[in-house]
Amino acid sequence: MRTVLYRIAYIAFVLEKSKNGFVLCRDLRTLASWNPGYIQFGSAGWFWEQSVNTYQIQVALEQEKDKDCLWVTYDEALLLEKVRDLLIRELATIARNHIRLAGN
Image (cartoon, rainbow, N blue to C red; front, side, top):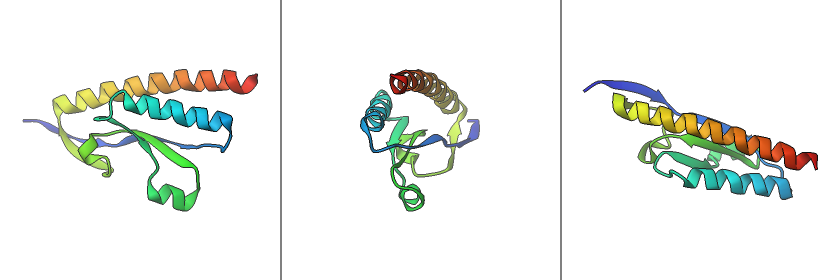
């Protein structure tokens, strides 16, 4: 069985304590809830030590979410890639919506 080294894909956000910040936080939580086995949203302790209100959304296997990298089968890597690509597309949509909201 072929395996590959997968490095966790994540994006970090500093969320403003405002109506727009709460809405963005809600949207990110909703996005993560679509596939909790592969997408997690939250805040790592070391992020909060450096900057409060810092969160990340990441693509990782749920049982391995606390690792920076892990060995996965080739098929699992392809699935993670698909989830990552979907996450990026959905994040772009969320960003466009929030930019539009902020402009009003």
